[in-house]
Length: 170
Image 1 (spheres, helix red, strand yellow):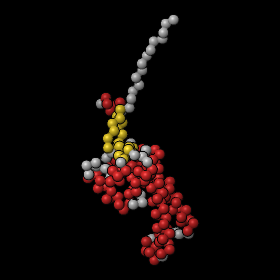
Image 2 (cartoon, rainbow, N blue to C red):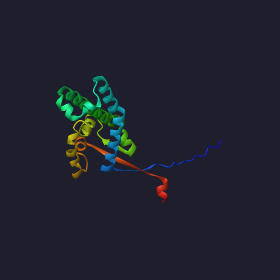
Image 3 (cartoon, one colour):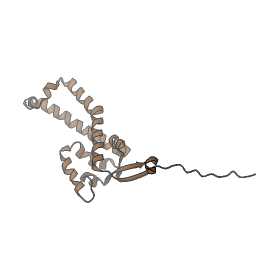
Image 4 (cartoon, helix red, strand yellow):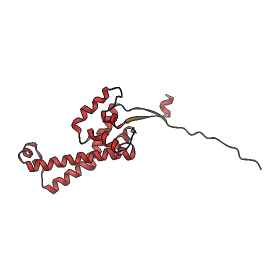
């Protein structure tokens, strides 16, 4: 009995170039994440808050809020809660998926330690401590060219550039 011939097939492979993500791509991914967060979480949350508290849009002006301390406290609590929800969204996305939806759309991913604590640390200045974001960005001036919280969490944001067959031929 004759043995069947063996054939070796080589399928085309994705040609992927991985490098450190540029700040512009990271910023675009963050804006996309903020839009997604606003549409899915923040807008319904604020709508429910307004419906349950009886507060109209006109009453949310800063002068009115400053004159009514209880209302100001309620609105400030709602904003702080929404920032914590943003922190949870960003951190759980990176912890479970290795990237947020904005990073996924732009072709970015997080490498390194993906423990929940590291993800929480990375995303603190993009959510709850947003006022410290300019200080966090000073890390881009350092040798590692990364955010200070990313350095502390021992993570890197990478850009996966996929080369297509057409661009290889040109």
